[in-house]
Length: 154
Image 1 (cartoon, one colour):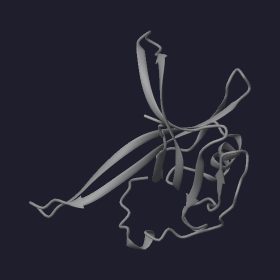
Image 2 (spheres, helix red, strand yellow; image 1 turned 90 degrees about the horizontal axis):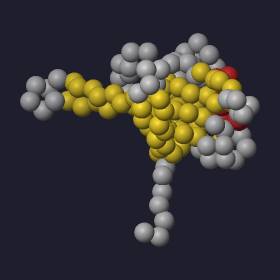
Image 3 (cartoon, one colour; image 1 turned 135 degrees about the vertical axis):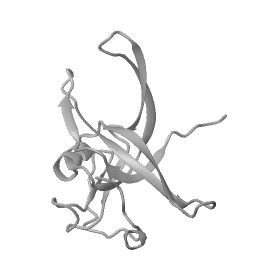
Image 4 (tube, one colour; image 1 turned 30 degrees about the vertical axis):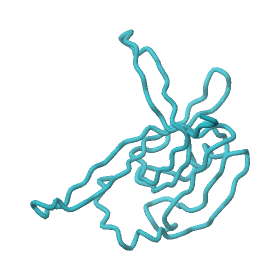
């Protein structure tokens, strides 16, 4: 194999408000859970079905982390690009555990807020890219919002 790619693209809603913490090194990390859902009609019963996957997102990029802290809240819809990373740790009972996360690295990753400023209680719109830069895409309406019957319980 001449090369490999580790890239994850997700569009979903936050399951909880972003949490930030400062590491012993002084680096700041922001994390939240993200829900992605798919819906379909059961062919046999005609009943509407839904499957939701939960993803743990960890942001090591300072600029993207600031945007997440300031503008995101539970229920916010975001588009993000990051990498899969699995880390091992010892829980409080001394058991070895593994956790797979979507990580936005210090100089990689992208986060874009979806929806318009009138969605929810806080202002949304804009975005931030990795690499130390930041961009604002302003408020934008997701083209699929009009077609969605949004039953996500946030």
